Image (cartoon, rainbow, N blue to C red; front, side, top):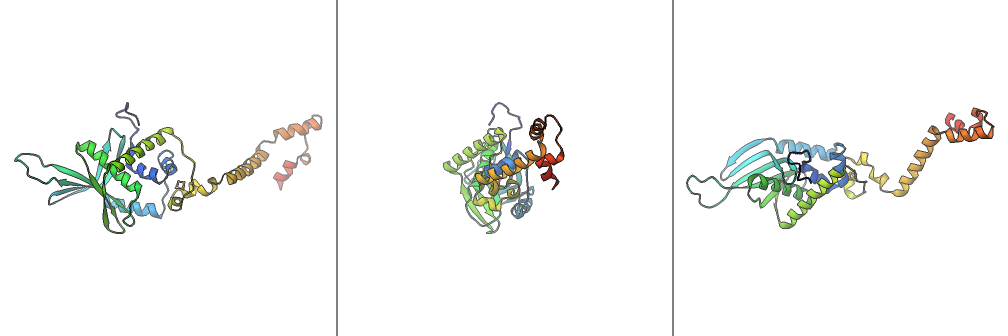
Length: 256
Ligand code: SF4
Protein backbone atom coordinates (compact mmCIF):
# COMPACT_ATOMS: atom_id res chain seq x y z
CA UNK A 1 0.00 0.00 0.00
CA UNK A 2 1.26 3.44 -0.76
CA UNK A 3 0.49 6.33 1.56
CA UNK A 4 2.60 8.84 -0.36
CA UNK A 5 0.38 8.94 -3.42
CA UNK A 6 -2.99 10.31 -2.25
CA UNK A 7 -4.48 10.56 -5.74
CA UNK A 8 -2.53 7.75 -7.36
CA UNK A 9 -3.66 4.80 -9.40
CA UNK A 10 -3.01 2.14 -6.78
CA UNK A 11 -6.64 1.90 -5.71
CA UNK A 12 -7.87 -1.68 -6.07
CA UNK A 13 -11.46 -2.89 -6.54
CA UNK A 14 -13.29 -4.54 -3.67
CA UNK A 15 -14.15 -7.48 -5.90
CA UNK A 16 -10.41 -8.29 -6.17
CA UNK A 17 -10.47 -9.19 -2.47
CA UNK A 18 -13.08 -11.81 -3.14
CA UNK A 19 -10.97 -13.18 -6.02
CA UNK A 20 -7.84 -13.17 -3.84
CA UNK A 21 -9.46 -15.27 -1.14
CA UNK A 22 -10.73 -17.66 -3.80
CA UNK A 23 -7.23 -18.01 -5.29
CA UNK A 24 -4.19 -15.67 -5.44
CA UNK A 25 -3.47 -16.68 -8.99
CA UNK A 26 -7.02 -15.92 -10.11
CA UNK A 27 -6.78 -12.42 -8.60
CA UNK A 28 -3.44 -11.81 -10.34
CA UNK A 29 -4.60 -13.16 -13.72
CA UNK A 30 -7.70 -11.00 -13.49
CA UNK A 31 -6.20 -7.78 -12.15
CA UNK A 32 -2.63 -7.88 -13.51
CA UNK A 33 -3.11 -9.67 -16.84
CA UNK A 34 -6.69 -8.49 -17.43
CA UNK A 35 -7.83 -12.05 -18.07
CA UNK A 36 -11.54 -12.53 -17.52
CA UNK A 37 -13.39 -15.53 -18.81
CA UNK A 38 -17.03 -16.35 -18.19
CA UNK A 39 -18.51 -19.64 -17.18
CA UNK A 40 -21.94 -20.61 -15.95
CA UNK A 41 -21.20 -19.36 -12.41
CA UNK A 42 -19.84 -15.95 -13.45
CA UNK A 43 -22.75 -15.39 -15.88
CA UNK A 44 -25.26 -16.11 -13.13
CA UNK A 45 -23.37 -13.86 -10.70
CA UNK A 46 -23.25 -11.02 -13.23
CA UNK A 47 -26.93 -11.31 -14.01
CA UNK A 48 -27.78 -11.24 -10.28
CA UNK A 49 -25.65 -8.14 -9.76
CA UNK A 50 -27.07 -6.43 -12.85
CA UNK A 51 -30.43 -6.54 -11.06
CA UNK A 52 -29.22 -6.08 -7.50
CA UNK A 53 -26.92 -3.09 -7.87
CA UNK A 54 -28.95 -1.05 -10.37
CA UNK A 55 -28.70 2.46 -8.93
CA UNK A 56 -31.82 3.40 -7.00
CA UNK A 57 -33.20 4.86 -3.85
CA UNK A 58 -36.14 4.06 -1.61
CA UNK A 59 -37.39 4.98 1.81
CA UNK A 60 -39.59 3.13 4.26
CA UNK A 61 -40.24 3.75 7.90
CA UNK A 62 -36.93 4.42 9.61
CA UNK A 63 -34.79 3.07 6.72
CA UNK A 64 -33.37 4.79 3.67
CA UNK A 65 -32.01 2.38 1.03
CA UNK A 66 -29.41 3.17 -1.64
CA UNK A 67 -28.69 0.65 -4.39
CA UNK A 68 -25.50 0.49 -6.47
CA UNK A 69 -23.70 2.91 -4.17
CA UNK A 70 -20.06 3.70 -4.94
CA UNK A 71 -17.82 3.49 -1.89
CA UNK A 72 -14.09 4.10 -1.41
CA UNK A 73 -11.38 4.31 1.19
CA UNK A 74 -8.41 6.56 0.63
CA UNK A 75 -6.63 5.07 3.64
CA UNK A 76 -6.94 1.50 2.33
CA UNK A 77 -6.70 2.39 -1.40
CA UNK A 78 -9.96 0.56 -2.13
CA UNK A 79 -13.05 1.34 -4.17
CA UNK A 80 -16.13 -0.50 -5.37
CA UNK A 81 -19.86 -0.55 -5.60
CA UNK A 82 -22.04 -1.79 -2.77
CA UNK A 83 -25.10 -3.69 -4.04
CA UNK A 84 -27.30 -2.12 -1.40
CA UNK A 85 -26.76 -0.02 1.70
CA UNK A 86 -29.49 0.53 4.24
CA UNK A 87 -29.22 3.66 6.37
CA UNK A 88 -31.12 2.84 9.55
CA UNK A 89 -32.30 5.70 11.70
CA UNK A 90 -30.78 5.48 15.16
CA UNK A 91 -33.35 4.87 17.90
CA UNK A 92 -33.89 7.39 20.64
CA UNK A 93 -35.18 10.94 20.86
CA UNK A 94 -33.89 13.69 18.57
CA UNK A 95 -33.86 17.34 19.46
CA UNK A 96 -35.61 19.77 17.16
CA UNK A 97 -33.35 20.88 14.29
CA UNK A 98 -30.84 18.09 14.96
CA UNK A 99 -29.89 16.04 11.87
CA UNK A 100 -31.15 12.47 11.67
CA UNK A 101 -28.48 10.06 12.91
CA UNK A 102 -28.23 6.92 10.77
CA UNK A 103 -26.14 3.78 10.83
CA UNK A 104 -25.12 2.18 7.54
CA UNK A 105 -25.84 -1.51 6.96
CA UNK A 106 -24.32 -2.89 3.72
CA UNK A 107 -25.93 -5.88 1.99
CA UNK A 108 -24.06 -7.91 -0.63
CA UNK A 109 -25.94 -10.18 -3.06
CA UNK A 110 -24.53 -13.63 -3.76
CA UNK A 111 -25.72 -16.63 -5.70
CA UNK A 112 -26.27 -19.94 -3.93
CA UNK A 113 -27.58 -21.06 -0.60
CA UNK A 114 -27.06 -19.33 2.74
CA UNK A 115 -23.63 -20.47 3.81
CA UNK A 116 -20.61 -18.72 5.23
CA UNK A 117 -17.78 -18.07 2.79
CA UNK A 118 -14.75 -16.17 4.08
CA UNK A 119 -14.34 -14.29 0.81
CA UNK A 120 -17.93 -12.93 0.88
CA UNK A 121 -17.63 -11.79 4.48
CA UNK A 122 -14.26 -10.14 3.88
CA UNK A 123 -15.58 -8.29 0.82
CA UNK A 124 -18.56 -7.06 2.88
CA UNK A 125 -16.33 -6.01 5.77
CA UNK A 126 -14.15 -4.04 3.34
CA UNK A 127 -17.28 -2.18 2.20
CA UNK A 128 -17.90 -1.37 5.86
CA UNK A 129 -14.36 0.04 6.16
CA UNK A 130 -15.08 2.32 3.18
CA UNK A 131 -18.43 3.46 4.63
CA UNK A 132 -16.86 4.13 8.04
CA UNK A 133 -14.23 6.35 6.43
CA UNK A 134 -16.77 8.15 4.23
CA UNK A 135 -19.37 8.70 6.96
CA UNK A 136 -17.12 9.03 10.01
CA UNK A 137 -19.37 6.60 11.89
CA UNK A 138 -18.98 2.97 12.93
CA UNK A 139 -20.63 0.28 10.81
CA UNK A 140 -21.13 -2.64 13.18
CA UNK A 141 -22.83 -5.19 10.90
CA UNK A 142 -24.10 -5.99 7.42
CA UNK A 143 -25.58 -8.98 5.61
CA UNK A 144 -25.06 -11.29 2.66
CA UNK A 145 -28.25 -12.02 0.71
CA UNK A 146 -28.13 -15.53 -0.72
CA UNK A 147 -30.30 -15.55 -3.83
CA UNK A 148 -30.96 -19.30 -3.94
CA UNK A 149 -32.18 -19.45 -0.34
CA UNK A 150 -33.74 -15.96 -0.63
CA UNK A 151 -32.33 -15.34 2.86
CA UNK A 152 -30.14 -12.77 4.51
CA UNK A 153 -27.25 -13.97 6.65
CA UNK A 154 -26.22 -11.27 9.10
CA UNK A 155 -22.47 -10.65 9.35
CA UNK A 156 -21.25 -8.81 12.46
CA UNK A 157 -17.98 -7.02 11.84
CA UNK A 158 -16.10 -8.59 14.73
CA UNK A 159 -12.50 -7.72 15.62
CA UNK A 160 -11.47 -11.09 14.09
CA UNK A 161 -13.23 -10.40 10.77
CA UNK A 162 -11.77 -6.88 10.70
CA UNK A 163 -8.27 -8.28 11.26
CA UNK A 164 -8.80 -10.91 8.54
CA UNK A 165 -10.03 -8.22 6.14
CA UNK A 166 -7.11 -5.88 6.88
CA UNK A 167 -4.64 -8.74 6.31
CA UNK A 168 -6.36 -9.62 3.00
CA UNK A 169 -6.22 -5.97 1.83
CA UNK A 170 -2.48 -5.80 2.61
CA UNK A 171 -1.91 -9.10 0.81
CA UNK A 172 -3.86 -7.88 -2.24
CA UNK A 173 -1.83 -4.67 -2.49
CA UNK A 174 1.42 -6.64 -2.13
CA UNK A 175 0.36 -9.11 -4.84
CA UNK A 176 -0.60 -6.39 -7.33
CA UNK A 177 2.51 -4.30 -6.55
CA UNK A 178 4.73 -7.36 -7.15
CA UNK A 179 3.48 -7.53 -10.75
CA UNK A 180 3.92 -11.31 -10.63
CA UNK A 181 1.34 -14.01 -11.23
CA UNK A 182 1.75 -16.84 -8.69
CA UNK A 183 2.01 -20.40 -10.05
CA UNK A 184 -1.13 -22.56 -10.12
CA UNK A 185 -1.98 -24.77 -7.17
CA UNK A 186 -4.49 -27.52 -7.93
CA UNK A 187 -7.33 -27.47 -5.40
CA UNK A 188 -11.04 -28.40 -5.25
CA UNK A 189 -12.03 -24.82 -6.12
CA UNK A 190 -10.32 -25.13 -9.51
CA UNK A 191 -13.32 -27.20 -10.63
CA UNK A 192 -15.61 -24.14 -10.55
CA UNK A 193 -13.03 -21.59 -11.75
CA UNK A 194 -13.72 -19.93 -15.09
CA UNK A 195 -9.97 -19.53 -15.73
CA UNK A 196 -9.20 -23.24 -15.48
CA UNK A 197 -8.79 -23.66 -19.25
CA UNK A 198 -6.14 -20.91 -19.32
CA UNK A 199 -4.50 -21.70 -16.01
CA UNK A 200 -4.13 -25.48 -16.61
CA UNK A 201 -3.60 -26.36 -12.94
CA UNK A 202 -3.63 -30.13 -13.61
CA UNK A 203 -0.68 -29.84 -16.00
CA UNK A 204 1.38 -27.42 -13.93
CA UNK A 205 0.68 -28.94 -10.51
CA UNK A 206 2.75 -32.02 -11.43
CA UNK A 207 6.48 -31.13 -11.63
CA UNK A 208 7.36 -34.39 -13.41
CA UNK A 209 4.78 -33.71 -16.09
CA UNK A 210 6.09 -30.15 -16.55
CA UNK A 211 9.65 -31.50 -16.93
CA UNK A 212 8.52 -34.09 -19.50
CA UNK A 213 6.49 -31.52 -21.47
CA UNK A 214 9.39 -29.01 -21.41
CA UNK A 215 11.82 -31.66 -22.66
CA UNK A 216 9.47 -32.70 -25.45
CA UNK A 217 8.74 -29.08 -26.42
CA UNK A 218 12.26 -27.68 -26.30
CA UNK A 219 14.08 -30.67 -27.78
CA UNK A 220 11.64 -30.61 -30.73
CA UNK A 221 11.98 -26.85 -31.22
CA UNK A 222 15.78 -26.98 -30.89
CA UNK A 223 15.96 -29.72 -33.51
CA UNK A 224 13.92 -27.54 -35.86
CA UNK A 225 15.36 -24.13 -35.22
CA UNK A 226 18.97 -24.62 -34.24
CA UNK A 227 20.73 -26.88 -36.77
CA UNK A 228 23.93 -24.80 -36.62
CA UNK A 229 25.95 -26.88 -34.12
CA UNK A 230 25.24 -30.11 -36.04
CA UNK A 231 25.98 -28.44 -39.38
CA UNK A 232 29.28 -27.18 -38.00
CA UNK A 233 30.16 -30.66 -36.79
CA UNK A 234 29.38 -32.15 -40.18
CA UNK A 235 31.42 -29.49 -41.98
CA UNK A 236 34.44 -30.24 -39.85
CA UNK A 237 34.03 -34.01 -40.54
CA UNK A 238 33.77 -33.34 -44.29
CA UNK A 239 36.74 -30.91 -44.20
CA UNK A 240 34.68 -27.80 -44.95
CA UNK A 241 32.56 -29.39 -47.67
CA UNK A 242 28.92 -28.26 -47.15
CA UNK A 243 26.80 -31.11 -45.89
CA UNK A 244 24.44 -32.80 -48.30
CA UNK A 245 20.84 -33.22 -47.19
CA UNK A 246 21.35 -36.95 -47.08
CA UNK A 247 24.11 -36.47 -44.44
CA UNK A 248 21.71 -34.82 -42.04
CA UNK A 249 19.49 -37.10 -39.96
CA UNK A 250 17.51 -34.08 -38.70
CA UNK A 251 16.71 -33.15 -42.32
CA UNK A 252 15.16 -36.59 -42.83
CA UNK A 253 13.13 -36.34 -39.72
CA UNK A 254 11.79 -32.94 -40.83
CA UNK A 255 10.82 -34.23 -44.24
CA UNK A 256 8.89 -37.24 -42.95
S1 SF4 B 1 -7.85 -22.89 -12.03
FE1 SF4 B 1 -7.33 -23.11 -9.85
S2 SF4 B 1 -5.20 -22.35 -9.68
FE2 SF4 B 1 -6.02 -21.65 -11.64
S3 SF4 B 1 -6.80 -19.58 -11.25
FE3 SF4 B 1 -8.52 -20.99 -11.01
S4 SF4 B 1 -8.61 -21.55 -8.86
FE4 SF4 B 1 -6.59 -20.63 -9.25
